[in-house]
Length: 377
Image 1 (tube, rainbow, N blue to C red):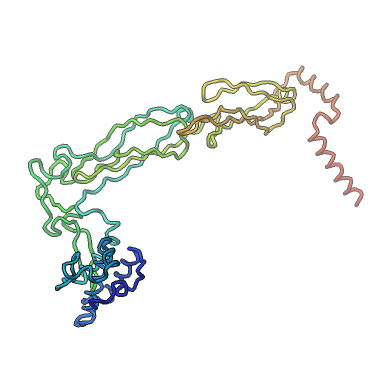
Image 2 (image 1 turned 120 degrees about the horizontal axis):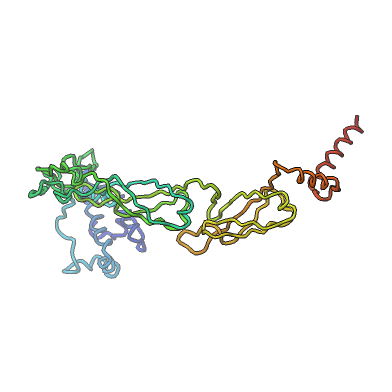
């Protein structure tokens, strides 16, 4: 097979990209590796040949030379020969070389210290504070680096030593048939180091519990469920590992006047029957601590909404404000003086039905329905 075309050996086109070539090599190497075909000289020879082909074609410079000159590029002192015996190693070695990137992609780097846990803090603020923003002082129960040992976990004056079980890799291997499985070292727990003489203050953890004071700036415009991330303010990592993060979740206390939907503020505003009938003007204080004049048009009905532009909540991390919406609720008087009752009686005597078209139309429909029932009977 020494003079067989490399592309034919790997069963790919000459225009194949690196990914296709690598995939073909993986498949063929699994099929004909000597560990899977013990005693088979043909498999051994084929494995050597496809390994030689892959070593050439995976290198851009060697592949360019091969595409131009063929096998002659690497003969008679050419650019790197492949002659002589080739040590292809065990099946576990080739398996790790081929699939190592895939298998170790999600694992923690060997010997690296573990990152600390993230923390969550639920903070309730008023709607006024959400409107204006404010600094808030917090007290967090967390873990911080141990001061006596400097976070190393070892007794002051001593240091950690390399784990003898995994030789500092943090992983140990176990063979299962043709496969080799890597597991976290049970001795050093993946750190690659063990502490013979732990720090008495932190018992070898490199961190200690502490109540920490923090100040966080709440930006204007935050809403229910807004999450604020404070990088590095979570729990300290074990044995000098990086700290986690602190996540602050915002909750809004119920307001006595306003309800919020996004950047819009809603308020129900009762108005007297005379104001609703004759029209008028009312003043509503906003969260911006200004009085907003709301014009009530004559003849307004309950449930109608009046929008005041720009008087709502500020846009979080942006510009401008939302609106304030006033929903009118016409209030029927319940405590009338004798004079007021007299005036209302006079008004009732002068009613023609045109003053309240909705109620007049409703009762006309009722009368018509009753007349139809009577005629049918």
